[in-house]
Length: 213
Ligand code: AMP
Image (cartoon, rainbow, N blue to C red):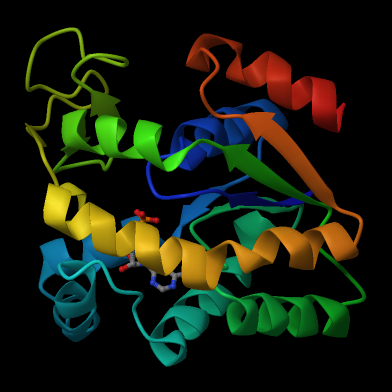
């Protein structure tokens, strides 16, 4: 099963992608996490990506598409995957379609996590991410057991540069201009599904299984 998560930054794509990955036993692939891992390791790719990410801009397609295609070509992706943060614009979606088409394959579902801009702004301010494993929390809505510490790996939780308020408004602008058109793109292909992103994350699995079966 090949699933794409759509939605504004902070809509809850990552949380739901993780639930889907666990339930359907497929890898959860986040291009944002791949970039952050590269930044942490100090690779040339990480250095280049960081400049764009810190400004709330998209990393150029030449870099992003290659990384994604390399990742989905790995063995663990044979039975499918859930993509979280890719595609982010129509050209990326078209490349993915072309590559899948070469394999006689296609995206099965694009799940749009629907949330208003006002809710996004409120959420991002309280979002915290683990420096070590990338898990995300929210000080109010999804707090870790121990303040500032990741439940999963014990890493330190921080406000990411790209979740800072001034960056968030850029990211929302980029979302509306470049990423939102993907809703119509996948609707036209008949694979679009929508979930209410303001619902309780505890019901995320039920919401998704209701849709995907
Ligand atoms: P995310 O964790 O998905 O919100 O991604 C964080 C940042 O990484 C984004 O704001 C972009 O700068 C960059 N990024 C992640 N995925 C992509 C993508 N598919 N295309 C371009 N930039 C991306």
